[in-house]
Length: 92
Image (cartoon, rainbow, N blue to C red; front, top):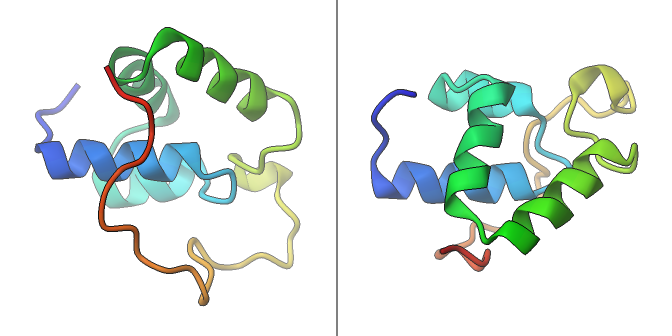
């Protein structure tokens, strides 16, 4: 895994936690493929938080993969989405 700054790790965790942000967007911005994002989530999150996230991503409700998304969604970020100044995800 490439060396990441703390602010980049926080942003990746935030993006990965958000259902509407596809793995492809994370790879585009940070160069981390899905498998590396999963490893990062596993190491940075509490086990229970990681398990909840994986269950949600694999449930079909999540749109983490571009191929599963509604084709009408063309943006990585909603135009009304506000910027979060700090990470509220349960980390170790």
